[in-house]
Structures are given as structure tokens and as C-alpha cells.
Length: 425
Image 1 (spheres, rainbow, N blue to C red):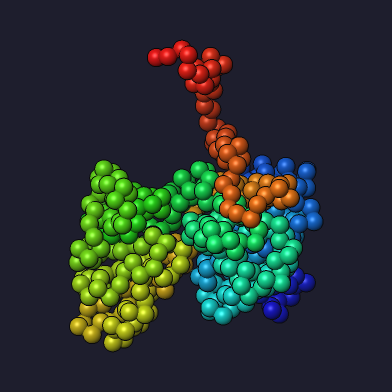
Image 2 (cartoon, rainbow, N blue to C red):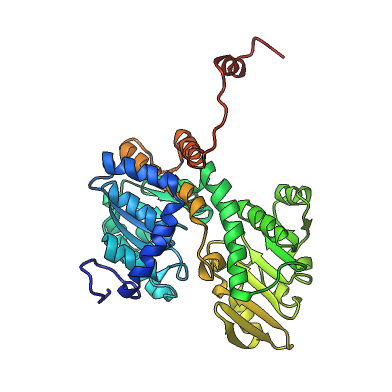
């Protein structure tokens, strides 16, 4: 573990980065009004008193504010990274120095270190797990079953993780209840769409300084992340091409005004590619074979398996780093393909992830879901739950209020009309 001058058990890059991290955390907090309200309630009511939380999330300024909120609600929080390239090292340092939160995360850590950090978070002996992609839950259920007995429940932040957890529940191997935060309307409709859309474009541009206007931008997947990314790419002047396997989503993309085709056809045309499917081998050798010289390939799905990087390595005669987070692969026929961020989440590898104002809702959902699990742990079954609708609606209401926006309310007469049948049309 770290030899940094602190009493907190941790493994971070450099405690001396904490001053910059503190400023970044404070900056994010200004735009996280809903979490501020919940934090004040938590300070007063202490709903998480005595609860140990092990969180495997992107270690960013926004996540730091969530960790502080949980801590102020009485929780004993430990944090590790959910992606080897997503950690903001200055934020990690400030969480350790200024807030006493054990952090096990270093930007660019290798695979072994990544999993050692997850093990360190599990050593915290959690009552609650908080995951982004279900890696911590997976390790807990396989290599560290000794730590399962104390766990009363958990939360999951992202689509990929929810899919994995539902598969575990279906097979009967999930050992405790988990709330699918990703499925809350105030999460996926905003975080996945507007957050991913903006931050992915930000990451691609920071990495490459490529002009999107006039380019052909290929997006694999038209879920909420794909929708948001397509909207932002079109807004930057790109000609957007969508590839899909779901006929309904493909049809929706067509109706939204985008070109839709197979990846085999799109691969010949694209200047920039970004995968947001959550699946593996979406871009493969067959696609690399026909790509333009200089094509840019990236991923904003959760794991780095969407691009078949081993196939690209095998096809290449050499590779070199031309810019931060840009690896240029020289193919044997002379063409070059540029891989961004090692195929990992480009919005966090090369940029700063989602803006704090949208993470405000996601992390409000996380905090309230954590409180919900603690209150209801004895009655919850070992399966995946949706965020209770009243919590979801409350987050939306608080967000509107923080923006100074008022909306209408149904009159008693309108409520009666909507609930009944006798009045007819």
C-alpha cells in the first residue's frame, strides 16, 4: 500500500496532488445541488451510521462528492477505481488527505494492480457494495466469498453491471440484493444520454484535436448512450452513421434522421468510430481490413472488449504513441489506424467524464438507494431491484427546484378523471 505521509490506508499516485484535487472537488460540488440537499439531510439524520461501504467507481471529482455525502451520513467509505484509466489522481489524493477516505486507485494502473485495489476495497469488509460494472461484486462472489457474510446489499451504476447482475440473479448465484441505479429515469435518461454524449465528444477531441464537422462519425449502438452521442456528433457538424443489431432501435435511429447500415458497410466509410454497445468484438479484423487510412477508433462502452485489440495488434507491423491516449497502428499494407485510450472509456481516459450537473442526479440516486438498502435489508430478496419510483421522482423534483423551475400539478378533478373510467370520453 501507499507510503504517502497519511494515516489513511491507501494506494494513490501522490498525496502532494491533493491541493489541486480539493479545488476540483469544490468546483464539482457547486453544480451538484441535489446531492448537497441530501448531504445536509444525511448529516442531520445519520442514516448510514455504522455502515461500511466499499465503492468501485470512477474516481472523479463527482464521485468524491458522493463519497463525502455518504461519509457525512455516518458511513465508513473505501473507494477503488472501476476502470484503470478513469482515476483523477489529484482527486484521489484530496479524498485521502482532506476527507480521510481510503482510496485505492492510480490512473493507468495495470490489470494486476486494478484487481489488487478491488481486493483492498473488499478488505474494508463492506456492509454495502457500490459498483460500476459489477467487477467488485464479481470478485466478491468468486475470489473473496469470505467477505460475503457481512454484506446486506449493494447498488450498481451502469448498464453493463446491471446486465451481469441480472444474469447472476437468474442463475441463483447472487448472494445479496442490489439496487439497479442505472435503471432510474433520473440516471439513464440523463447521465447515459447527455453525460455520455458530451463527455465522449470531449474525450475524442481532446485526444485527437480532430475536426468533426464534415466527417463521417460511426456509432455502434443506439441505446441511451448512442442516442446522446449521435445527437452531439451531429451538433458538431458530423455526418452520423448508426450500426445496430436491434431492429427497433435501428428504426428509431432512422426516424431520428441518421443513416443506418451494417458495420461491414460503415467500416469502409467512417473517419471516426465509437462503440457504445456493452458487448464484445463490435469492431473486428473484418472491419479493420476495409477502414480508411487514418481512421480513428474509440470506445465509450464500459469495458475495452468492444474493439478486438488483439486482432489489430496481429494485423500491424508496428505501433507508436503519437499523442496522449492515441496509439497509431501501422498495418502491413501501409494504412494506419488510430486507437484512442487503449480502447477504454475515452470520455474518462482522455477527458474528465460526465459533467457534475448530470452526475448530481445519478449520485443522488446512489445515496438514496444506499439509504433504502439499509432501511429495508431484512426484507429484500437476493435479486436486482429498481430504484423505488418515489425516490426517482424526488430526485427529478429536487433537480428542477435547484434550477429554479416550477411545473404544474394535477387538480383533484384531473386526478379523479385519470384514475376512473365512468366519465368516458
